[in-house]
Image 1: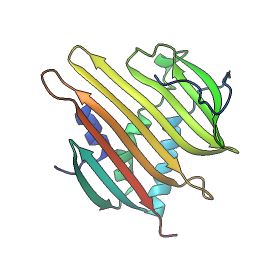
Image 2: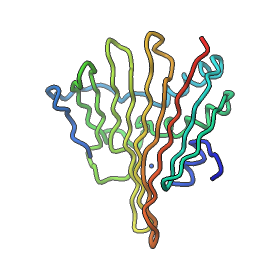
Image 3: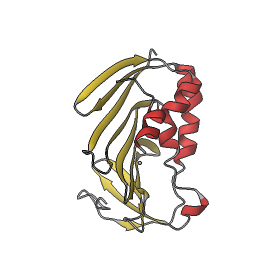
Image 4: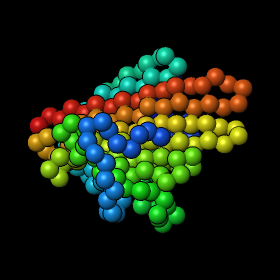
Length: 195
């Protein structure tokens, strides 16, 4: 299997959970949607400067491929493009999401949930934070039509004490085409910083 960047891999494969966790009450809040594309674009120059080593694993149909990478700025753009594309602040999506807030353990969780969970596209975007620190981002993306079904969960985790450092990212999902078996896949990237 040829080793692919997340952006290229996502292009080849095409993108409801409960809205509150058992850990806390749910309340509706009126805030603008989290700017995921902006967050990703801000990460790119920092990652290019810090030049972390990436331990990247792709698992497809039970077969795993692992590679150690170091990416330049253009490489990071390709690697994280799928996350930038999951931004829900596009004008066409205005008023498509309801915003809720809950807690999960020590995390405060803001959930942007599609008002029509059957619609194609981003089903939800979850932002896990503590004291203004974004610790984790999770997105569920689904596409379905008569010829194709695809579902994937995108995750990014950040570290402390340097809150701007991306620690890991993952894409887990499945796709189904007519007359073919469902293909499950996972992509994991773990970053190691020299300083």
